[in-house]
Amino acid sequence: MTESLPPTRPRIPGAGLAKGLAVTLRTMTRKTVTEQYPDVQPELPPRTRGVIGLFEENCTVCMLCARECPDWCIYIDSHKETVPAAVEGGRERSRNVLDRFAIDFALCMYCGICIEVCPFDALFWSPEFEYAETDIHELTHERDRLREWMWTVPAPPALDPAAEEPKELAAARKAADKLAAAQAAAAEEPTPGEPTPGESTPGEPTPGEEGPA
Ligand code: SF4
Ligand code: SF4
Image (cartoon, rainbow, N blue to C red):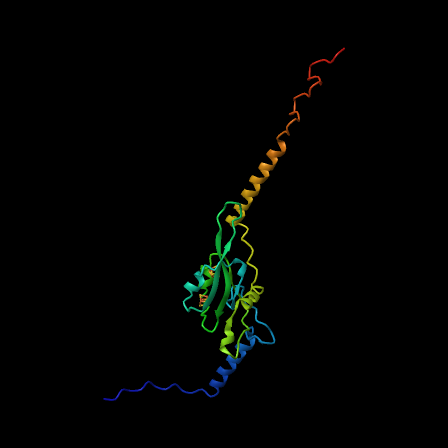
């Protein structure tokens, strides 16, 4: 038994052309979204993940970023240095000194884990993206290049006026208030040999006492 086919609709002459023209008209009246890159630079959102900048002054060589990177594309070398004691009889300290910090952007998958885990705010996203290379080895950016990216990192957005004060600011304000109170108390204290208010100096009549007639 053969299945009967659905009846075909009658073809209207010029329907396809009208449909095509309707699409053209609709597109013509919409705002264009095509950007004329590279003649016009795109306006990227501030949180764009373009490249990673290193602020090496903040880096303590704790190695957390390199350990957590899922692609193992962060290379860090360091050595230890002994810092002499700050006070006489104190203990010497040892600190890590950074020798190499590099990120291989040929392997990086821009997950941002390294930036998230850095406990010392040494890594930042920059929206810069124009660093394509013809040689893949050039995509390993060493510390100097990573530092250069730092200057392209956008400033953080302003705080919400209703937001809670950052704890760093609150701590700094508390310390400043304490210092100001201590300075004010020290200024009020009489210096030795100086009479306190209400106290008379020797040979001077006290209030209510009469001098020699
Ligand atoms: S963004 Fe992700 S993949 Fe790239 S270096 Fe950081 S942790 Fe590694
Ligand atoms: S996690 Fe931060 S401080 Fe630690 S090594 Fe990486 S960049 Fe430096």
